[in-house]
Length: 188
Image (cartoon, rainbow, N blue to C red; front, side, top):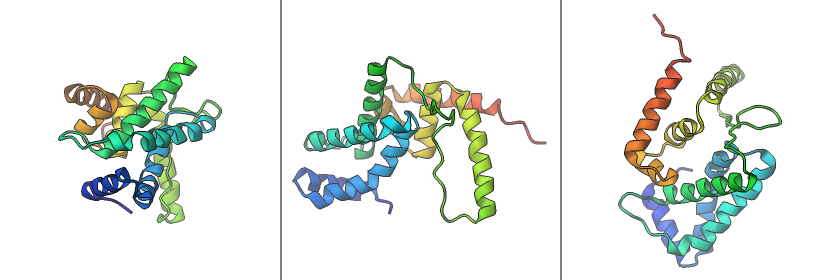
């Protein structure tokens, strides 16, 4: 179920008034997106705690949320998730890890249930190739590409989530795409 920006904002307004069913709809809509975002950055053991922390912060702060010309609720909630992950790593005094330390795999795959077995194998091979290439990119490049192309955020929203200017986001995206080109041979 995909929600429009207008539908999300209406649900937020109802949730701010204490309507539990509206918050429940927001939770059900954003839980898989936030889960994927966090699982991409931390190991499975820590992910559930961090996901819970994000939604506790959302419950605590939702009444303070207000839509801005540049910012949407989606960007706001992802900004909370971004900050929770940063705080987690600050506490751990480790660097960002998009790779599961136990398996060495980037936690990225979300299977498409409508694919036939042959398409699933091809998709798995493609995802493996993408994983290998993403491992080679610097953390800021990976994050911007994920937010732009997997989560489909605008540069303005990515700017709000990461806390960098839109110009900086465009530069990071351009550099990341240039870096990616190195790993794809030119076809003749």
